[in-house]
Image (cartoon, rainbow, N blue to C red; front, side, top):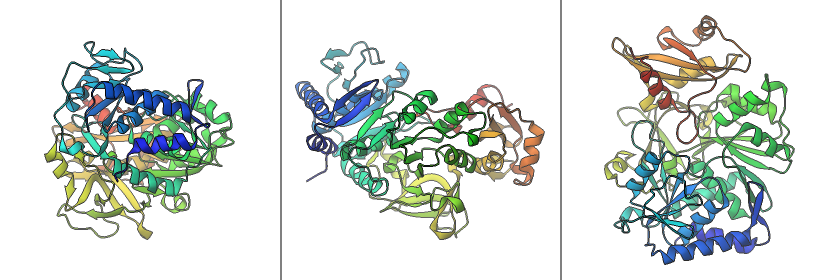
Length: 494
């Protein structure tokens, strides 16, 4: 019998009927109420003639109706396509065209769907016929679109079986339990937010949903004293620390119940790690690395490894095998850099309507992450950058992450990001964006002097820029592609 994530949620609703399932915007619903919403939406989908494995869009804004919609769609045998309602109308139109979706569940009629779509209860129904059945979507639970920083977004198809299996492996480490309260500030179009929400509901816990991350609301929620767990990306913590104090290391946050802080989606450097541990000393900091294409969370850096391996992604999760290969496809020696590849039972079914991209994503059954990594001692893995982000300056290959590490430990630096920008003479020049700590003014000469002992000359930045924050991509994570585009649009390439 195949696994169905919607049935999993309904089973939790029956087991924890009188408990609070979700709190959002000052209101709450019980598991019994959540089940009623799921059943009502399922009826509406049936009345609309939903087809097996049909993609259904959910306009998400971290509201209880979003998760009820997910479960209703799964129980109807269809596939969830979460779309952040803050997306511009052109982006929404592009995703609708890519999926062929003709039904959306939308709590806000002004969310950016075409005006030709008619209202049917809580559904919006377009004028199209159901899309032609796709074999790729048989058994699928989700289509999650990647950020597409180097091109058009790709629709990652994840099956019920793969996602449910990954939930089990994450839970074996994080140990979600009934009655625990977890805070969600990540949007449900993000794989991280999906597994966090489903694990809370599966276990009978309470999910406190915030529509968006703001440092003030985040601090206020923790200070209430009942949040046991939260999931964040590093950019969120940088923002919080900047607002919390001129010197974050001197001021602890009030979070009496917080015991687990799950962080992922971006690299976590030593400076930010130390700041987080200083302001949240009682919370277990778990750094997770994973990809949308593998349902997330393929490596963990746990507190026991952090003193020796800060900045690494850690050790593989249960059932994950890995290798690091060179350009010739052969495994490299420990300490040498190469592409990180994974063999996992939780891999995507494929990219939607892109068989050639799906084929290219694998090598002899190994998923190609596109990340450059090296094997450290004791089986710990360290990232060195993205293959597509490697800077080619005057024939030398330079990793942006290596540059960033050399500057990130400067005491007045809050965050850094390096990228290559096209140059007619050198091919690319190295640009570095620096976010100073609150109240600090940093001299460029001093910065270069700081890095001189850590980087050879050809790896040092040609240009240093300053800003109040790192540029963000569609999912709210710091995005190197966005930085490069902005610099080139400003004419930095010249």
